[in-house]
Image (cartoon, rainbow over all chains, first blue to last red; front, side):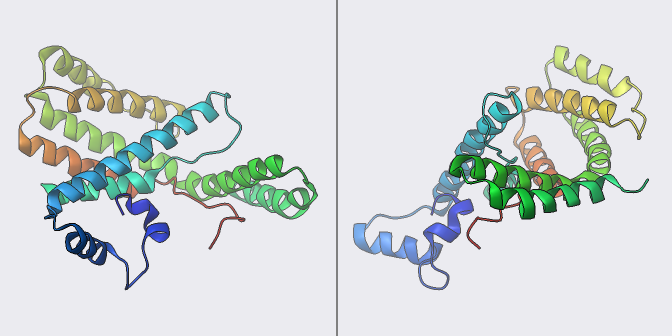
Amino acid sequence: MTNLGRKREHQIPGYWERRQIVDAYRGLTGHKVCEAALIWWNVFSCWKLAVIQLTAVKEMVAGRHNRVFQTPSRLFRQMFQMMETLG
Amino acid sequence: MRPTVEEQLRVTCRILDEIVAPNVSDRFAHTILDGLIANLRMLTAALPAVAGFLRHDNDATLGLLSALSEVLPPKLAARIDKAMAAPEPDVADGTALEERNRLLREHLAAAVCSAGLPPEMHRTIVQHMTERASRVPMRFVPTSSANP
Protein backbone atom coordinates (compact mmCIF):
# COMPACT_ATOMS: atom_id res chain seq x y z
CA MET A 1 0.00 0.00 0.00
CA THR A 2 2.91 2.35 0.58
CA ASN A 3 4.30 1.89 -2.89
CA LEU A 4 1.76 2.88 -5.53
CA GLY A 5 3.90 1.18 -8.15
CA ARG A 6 2.88 -2.11 -6.55
CA LYS A 7 -0.82 -1.24 -6.38
CA ARG A 8 -1.75 -4.19 -8.58
CA GLU A 9 -0.01 -6.62 -6.23
CA HIS A 10 -1.22 -5.12 -2.98
CA GLN A 11 -4.77 -3.99 -3.68
CA ILE A 12 -8.05 -5.43 -4.99
CA PRO A 13 -9.96 -2.91 -7.09
CA GLY A 14 -13.20 -1.89 -5.43
CA TYR A 15 -12.63 -4.02 -2.31
CA TRP A 16 -9.18 -3.50 -0.88
CA GLU A 17 -8.02 -0.11 -2.01
CA ARG A 18 -6.36 2.69 -0.09
CA ARG A 19 -9.52 3.85 1.70
CA GLN A 20 -10.56 0.33 2.76
CA ILE A 21 -7.05 -0.50 3.96
CA VAL A 22 -6.84 2.69 6.02
CA ASP A 23 -10.33 2.13 7.46
CA ALA A 24 -9.49 -1.48 8.36
CA TYR A 25 -6.26 -0.37 10.01
CA ARG A 26 -8.10 2.31 11.99
CA GLY A 27 -10.77 -0.21 13.01
CA LEU A 28 -8.31 -2.88 14.08
CA THR A 29 -5.78 -0.71 15.89
CA GLY A 30 -7.74 2.35 16.94
CA HIS A 31 -4.91 4.51 15.65
CA LYS A 32 -5.57 7.72 13.81
CA VAL A 33 -4.13 7.93 10.30
CA CYS A 34 -2.71 11.24 9.17
CA GLU A 35 -3.23 11.48 5.40
CA ALA A 36 -0.20 13.75 4.92
CA ALA A 37 2.00 11.35 6.90
CA LEU A 38 0.75 8.44 4.81
CA ILE A 39 1.57 10.31 1.62
CA TRP A 40 5.04 11.02 3.03
CA TRP A 41 5.55 7.25 3.40
CA ASN A 42 4.23 6.74 -0.13
CA VAL A 43 6.79 9.25 -1.40
CA PHE A 44 9.56 7.66 0.65
CA SER A 45 8.64 4.23 -0.64
CA CYS A 46 8.74 5.41 -4.28
CA TRP A 47 12.06 7.12 -3.67
CA LYS A 48 13.55 4.01 -2.05
CA LEU A 49 12.44 1.74 -4.88
CA ALA A 50 13.69 4.27 -7.45
CA VAL A 51 17.13 4.24 -5.77
CA ILE A 52 17.22 0.43 -5.84
CA GLN A 53 16.22 0.35 -9.51
CA LEU A 54 18.63 3.13 -10.52
CA THR A 55 21.44 1.28 -8.76
CA ALA A 56 20.64 -1.75 -10.92
CA VAL A 57 20.53 0.45 -14.04
CA LYS A 58 23.92 1.93 -13.12
CA GLU A 59 25.44 -1.52 -12.60
CA MET A 60 24.05 -2.67 -15.95
CA VAL A 61 25.41 0.38 -17.79
CA ALA A 62 28.79 -0.09 -16.10
CA GLY A 63 28.90 -3.67 -17.37
CA ARG A 64 28.88 -5.22 -13.92
CA HIS A 65 25.39 -6.67 -14.18
CA ASN A 66 23.86 -8.47 -17.15
CA ARG A 67 20.20 -8.18 -16.32
CA VAL A 68 18.48 -5.26 -18.04
CA PHE A 69 16.71 -2.67 -15.90
CA GLN A 70 14.85 0.32 -17.27
CA THR A 71 14.83 3.80 -15.77
CA PRO A 72 11.92 4.00 -13.31
CA SER A 73 10.34 7.14 -14.82
CA ARG A 74 6.84 6.00 -13.80
CA LEU A 75 7.94 5.93 -10.16
CA PHE A 76 9.38 9.43 -10.44
CA ARG A 77 6.11 10.71 -11.86
CA GLN A 78 4.04 9.19 -9.05
CA MET A 79 6.47 10.43 -6.45
CA PHE A 80 6.52 14.04 -7.65
CA GLN A 81 2.76 14.13 -8.11
CA MET A 82 2.34 13.03 -4.49
CA MET A 83 4.86 15.62 -3.35
CA GLU A 84 2.79 18.27 -5.10
CA THR A 85 -0.27 17.23 -3.12
CA LEU A 86 1.69 17.82 0.08
CA GLY A 87 2.36 21.41 -1.00
CA MET B 1 16.98 7.14 -44.60
CA ARG B 2 15.51 3.68 -45.16
CA PRO B 3 15.43 1.41 -43.43
CA THR B 4 15.03 3.84 -40.54
CA VAL B 5 16.65 3.21 -37.19
CA GLU B 6 13.18 2.49 -35.83
CA GLU B 7 12.47 -0.07 -38.54
CA GLN B 8 15.77 -1.82 -37.90
CA LEU B 9 15.23 -1.90 -34.16
CA ARG B 10 11.72 -3.24 -34.62
CA VAL B 11 12.85 -6.06 -36.89
CA THR B 12 15.69 -6.87 -34.49
CA CYS B 13 13.15 -7.24 -31.68
CA ARG B 14 10.95 -9.46 -33.80
CA ILE B 15 13.81 -11.78 -34.78
CA LEU B 16 15.08 -12.02 -31.22
CA ASP B 17 11.57 -12.67 -29.96
CA GLU B 18 10.38 -15.13 -32.60
CA ILE B 19 13.55 -16.89 -33.75
CA VAL B 20 16.18 -16.63 -31.05
CA ALA B 21 14.17 -16.70 -27.80
CA PRO B 22 12.34 -20.00 -28.44
CA ASN B 23 15.72 -21.68 -28.92
CA VAL B 24 17.31 -20.40 -25.74
CA SER B 25 16.79 -23.21 -23.26
CA ASP B 26 18.84 -21.87 -20.37
CA ARG B 27 16.40 -20.15 -18.02
CA PHE B 28 18.75 -17.38 -16.87
CA ALA B 29 19.82 -16.58 -20.43
CA HIS B 30 16.15 -16.46 -21.41
CA THR B 31 15.41 -13.96 -18.64
CA ILE B 32 18.29 -11.79 -19.81
CA LEU B 33 17.10 -12.01 -23.41
CA ASP B 34 13.53 -11.06 -22.41
CA GLY B 35 14.91 -7.98 -20.66
CA LEU B 36 17.02 -7.04 -23.67
CA ILE B 37 14.06 -7.32 -26.04
CA ALA B 38 11.86 -5.21 -23.75
CA ASN B 39 14.62 -2.62 -23.52
CA LEU B 40 15.00 -2.54 -27.30
CA ARG B 41 11.23 -2.03 -27.62
CA MET B 42 11.40 0.82 -25.12
CA LEU B 43 14.28 2.42 -27.06
CA THR B 44 12.45 1.98 -30.37
CA ALA B 45 9.48 3.91 -29.01
CA ALA B 46 11.58 6.53 -27.22
CA LEU B 47 14.28 7.27 -29.76
CA PRO B 48 12.36 9.68 -32.01
CA ALA B 49 11.43 11.81 -28.98
CA VAL B 50 14.80 11.97 -27.20
CA ALA B 51 16.30 15.01 -28.96
CA GLY B 52 13.08 17.00 -28.58
CA PHE B 53 12.87 16.06 -24.93
CA LEU B 54 16.45 17.15 -24.29
CA ARG B 55 15.96 20.50 -26.02
CA HIS B 56 12.80 21.17 -24.03
CA ASP B 57 14.36 19.97 -20.80
CA ASN B 58 17.45 22.10 -21.28
CA ASP B 59 15.25 25.18 -21.79
CA ALA B 60 13.05 24.33 -18.80
CA THR B 61 16.03 23.59 -16.54
CA LEU B 62 17.72 26.83 -17.55
CA GLY B 63 14.53 28.71 -16.72
CA LEU B 64 14.33 27.06 -13.32
CA LEU B 65 18.02 27.64 -12.56
CA SER B 66 17.60 31.26 -13.52
CA ALA B 67 14.67 31.62 -11.10
CA LEU B 68 16.64 29.91 -8.33
CA SER B 69 19.92 31.70 -8.97
CA GLU B 70 19.38 34.68 -6.68
CA VAL B 71 18.83 32.54 -3.57
CA LEU B 72 21.75 30.17 -4.24
CA PRO B 73 25.30 30.35 -2.86
CA PRO B 74 27.44 32.70 -4.98
CA LYS B 75 29.79 29.95 -6.23
CA LEU B 76 26.93 27.85 -7.53
CA ALA B 77 25.16 30.90 -8.96
CA ALA B 78 28.38 31.76 -10.82
CA ARG B 79 28.54 28.25 -12.30
CA ILE B 80 24.93 28.57 -13.38
CA ASP B 81 25.61 31.98 -14.96
CA LYS B 82 28.46 30.41 -16.90
CA ALA B 83 26.22 27.58 -18.12
CA MET B 84 23.54 30.06 -19.12
CA ALA B 85 26.04 32.09 -21.10
CA ALA B 86 27.21 29.05 -23.07
CA PRO B 87 25.72 28.70 -26.54
CA GLU B 88 23.00 26.10 -27.08
CA PRO B 89 24.30 23.00 -28.85
CA ASP B 90 23.37 22.24 -32.43
CA VAL B 91 19.94 20.57 -32.35
CA ALA B 92 21.28 17.79 -34.56
CA ASP B 93 24.16 17.02 -32.18
CA GLY B 94 22.70 14.41 -29.83
CA THR B 95 25.90 13.98 -27.83
CA ALA B 96 26.19 17.73 -27.19
CA LEU B 97 22.51 17.92 -26.17
CA GLU B 98 23.05 15.06 -23.70
CA GLU B 99 26.15 16.70 -22.28
CA ARG B 100 24.38 20.05 -21.92
CA ASN B 101 21.51 18.27 -20.17
CA ARG B 102 23.90 16.42 -17.86
CA LEU B 103 25.60 19.68 -16.84
CA LEU B 104 22.34 21.55 -16.25
CA ARG B 105 20.87 18.68 -14.22
CA GLU B 106 24.08 18.57 -12.17
CA HIS B 107 23.62 22.26 -11.36
CA LEU B 108 19.97 21.66 -10.52
CA ALA B 109 20.87 18.78 -8.19
CA ALA B 110 23.33 21.08 -6.39
CA ALA B 111 20.71 23.84 -6.23
CA VAL B 112 18.06 21.51 -4.79
CA CYS B 113 20.47 20.51 -2.03
CA SER B 114 21.25 24.13 -1.12
CA ALA B 115 20.28 25.15 2.37
CA GLY B 116 17.74 27.88 2.87
CA LEU B 117 15.65 27.52 -0.27
CA PRO B 118 12.32 29.23 0.39
CA PRO B 119 9.19 26.98 0.35
CA GLU B 120 7.86 28.54 -2.87
CA MET B 121 11.09 27.51 -4.60
CA HIS B 122 10.63 23.95 -3.35
CA ARG B 123 7.16 23.95 -4.88
CA THR B 124 8.51 25.31 -8.17
CA ILE B 125 11.18 22.58 -8.23
CA VAL B 126 8.63 19.82 -7.56
CA GLN B 127 6.36 21.19 -10.31
CA HIS B 128 9.31 21.20 -12.67
CA MET B 129 10.20 17.62 -11.75
CA THR B 130 6.60 16.43 -12.18
CA GLU B 131 6.41 18.05 -15.59
CA ARG B 132 9.76 16.55 -16.55
CA ALA B 133 8.80 13.07 -15.39
CA SER B 134 5.64 13.24 -17.48
CA ARG B 135 7.67 14.15 -20.58
CA VAL B 136 10.47 11.61 -20.31
CA PRO B 137 10.29 9.54 -23.51
CA MET B 138 11.84 6.40 -22.04
CA ARG B 139 8.79 4.67 -20.62
CA PHE B 140 8.86 1.24 -19.05
CA VAL B 141 8.10 -1.63 -21.41
CA PRO B 142 7.39 -4.99 -19.71
CA THR B 143 8.93 -8.22 -20.93
CA SER B 144 6.70 -10.41 -23.08
CA SER B 145 6.77 -13.06 -20.35
CA ALA B 146 5.56 -10.63 -17.68
CA ASN B 147 2.06 -11.19 -16.35
CA PRO B 148 -0.59 -9.06 -18.10
